[in-house]
Image (cartoon, rainbow, N blue to C red; front, side, top):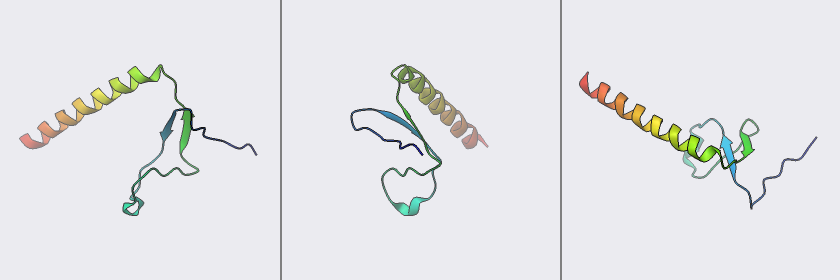
Length: 67
């Protein structure tokens, strides 16, 4: 069994499924979460995805208001 250690001096991308969490604040990482070391080249890609998600949300909001 290998130990996975998160180092304070590094950045990570953490992926997982959000659940109710009982109203607790903070970040919960489970055995099913994916934690990978961040790569600087992902910065622009993540910004682009965020913009797309925002424009998609706006489009869906307008569509819902019209109906």
